[in-house]
Image (cartoon, rainbow, N blue to C red; front, side, top):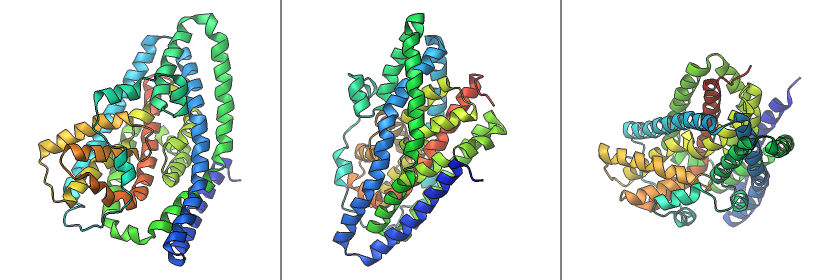
Length: 410
């Protein structure tokens, strides 16, 4: 008998196939104006699913993180777990960025390529501005918990929750009713996760059908080299992550992968790694990671550990420079890499975040920002791989930190 998890994964895959078929039929059989209108209506299905997920992220992060920290007990433990997590995140980010840089220099996907720019670049460039330390601080520390929750600023919710959780841990018995209440809230919201995930196939169908209806399958052949080489890069990155995971987790790595198949599938098909955060929390706890570590490390990972997005940033930035025939020496490329390392940490939660960071960085290094328009038509297809990789990276990071803490059960 097929389990509920496997059944949902199967429905998601079926929805992807139907979405491709419906999208292609629309692309071939409809006028452009009608096609765009129907595609934007289909996207409503995806919006509903993503909104339902976003609705539960803020209360879930707050409740689980406060309970987790209250159980960790003191600031010293919080600092140790946070330090270990950040050490892993920074190492993984650096490897991902370096891998993107090495591959794009070795494979040269942009050299001698003549591409037509897509017109819908304004929304990305509109969000682009020079990155400053002030912006980063403003993004990190909330002025209001309510505002942070309303805008789903995961990093700001994490900062507030750490203060709140440490305060709960330090006042002992007074905080017991609050912690118990939040623990009950967390259980209720995890139950809601199950209901929300039932909408995933509809969201997947809408996302795939809409993008194929507008761009057609032809766009894939035009950019076949770029997409192919980017996915080769992701395959290498997966291999590195899996080997690193195996070194720490041993044979349990296989079980971890089995547990996260569904979150990976949903992230891949909806292009949103955030959409699976609640489900991923649940699966990691089932895998044996303690709730106190999961609820602390995973939300941090969603701000600091997006390995797929990291690799894409150096890959896309240098690809655009290659298309424009702009040569960058090794020193400049390393400076760009370090700039991306910093700027990427400040914009978690922004739609098309990777593109916004790439656009900002291009401007700093004298590459035309309009170059973003060259990769917009296939950004959706690259985003699928980026999102799935982000999920794998965060799942392995959380499991390894659990192991380091001696908290990984069977």
